[in-house]
Image 1: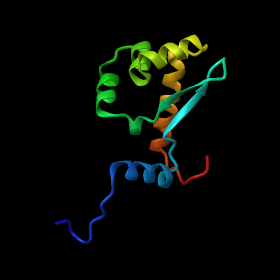
Image 2: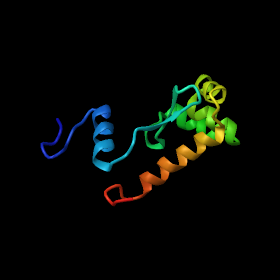
Image 3: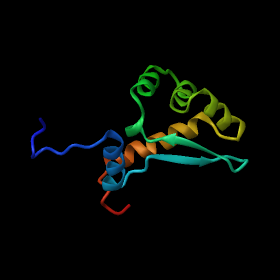
Image 4: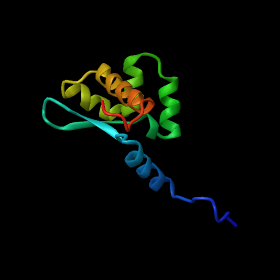
Length: 105
């Protein structure tokens, strides 16, 4: 039986609340030359499987493919993007997560 002083939340609910409370973005949409978008997930919200692929990847292209998946990565490249764009977005979101989101930027 759960303690009456403990808070219980569903995982999706907790993640949504973290996005709101911490002022985090769940991801970043990159607009391609054809005006479609590719979404780069926030490093804080990737699955265990995706995280394992990202950690095992060597180099910018392999890491970008691990973050996006091969199909979305191919769409990014075809739409005028670069693997380094994925890495820049990933780094921006990672740095945002380390800063105090309540302070003005």
